[in-house]
Length: 77
Image 1 (spheres, rainbow, N blue to C red):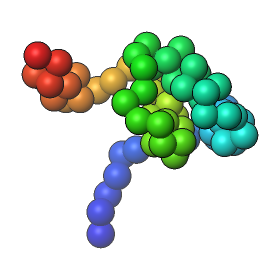
Image 2 (image 1 turned 180 degrees about the vertical axis):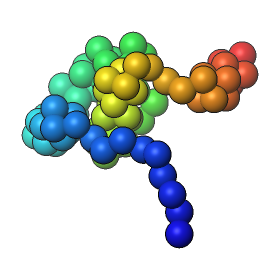
Image 3 (image 1 turned 135 degrees about the vertical axis):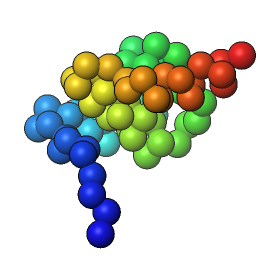
Image 4 (image 1 turned 120 degrees about the vertical axis):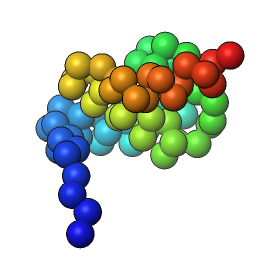
């Protein structure tokens, strides 16, 4: 059995995901840039929605965990 410490997604994020599913790809790309502060690397709707939801959840919970930040920094070089 796997134990997890993940928090459930808030109602606001669930509503946002539902709203994003109705967006056009171009509107979703604009929303992605607004939330993630970078252009999306993919035009795939599901990928963009997941990435935006992940970012919103991270912001809601006080930012990204340090281990994620450490992993991401070497990739930026």
